Image (cartoon, rainbow, N blue to C red; front, side):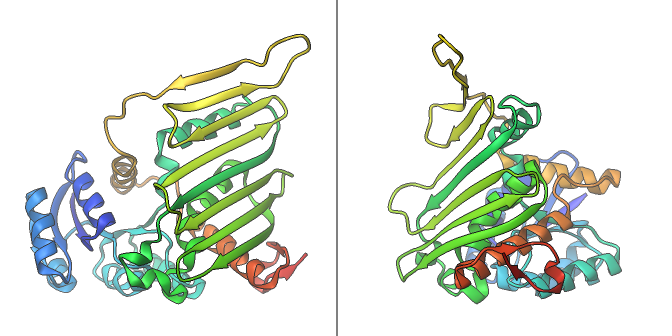
Length: 335
């Protein structure tokens, strides 16, 4: 199977590097309007470079393309790839609007090509392990969850991030990772409440999701944090707490509930060596779905649902009111 990559920024380089390692996949080419950058990425991966997407599709006849350009450009290139009969891996979020996302999904279905949205957090070993332990009942009945995803402002290097119509801001671009992940663990969401502060230097949001099963998740996202990029997750239930922090020396901490006359035990699980990064596992999985005709871990519907929730959070932050997710197609309703 032949794969190509559009966009040679950080994510494009990541996709190119990992496609080069996936068994049964040949990285046929990369493409970027910056010829010097495209040549550099192609050289480091032993493949060809193009500055025209159309030329790359016509010359290489790929089976799959990774679309790693800015969010507001996704629709244009997804529609082109679908028309050419090429399967697509598109970076998250699908698009800057639900209308664009719907058009992209419909075009791929009409053309009979697969559209995979790269919600990579589900492929991180620590996050997968946490989800498995929660589903196995390690902490009993889940009650309250917390996530954190903070780092520098990407607008400092790529100005389009400052334009919320293009990027969606910190909620649609960054917190959508945790929105999708939490929904994958706890199912459908009943209501959303969000607070947000934006300035030239920062974009901060705190989003609270109330799930239909009664669980509550507080998701914190911050562009403009002066320290290193950091992620964290905590699940608290009736029998204990599960914690992960990207800065910790261990990948997972388990703390059980206090028992009468007993000390509270804590179990630290050492980090295990990873043979590949999560982006490799993600792309390997998508390639397997194409070859075997199976459904992906993250469906296009999942990615669209995450967008719906993100836009509900944005609307809540603007109105100061909780938003109910029921009947969303008929318009979001305040609680």
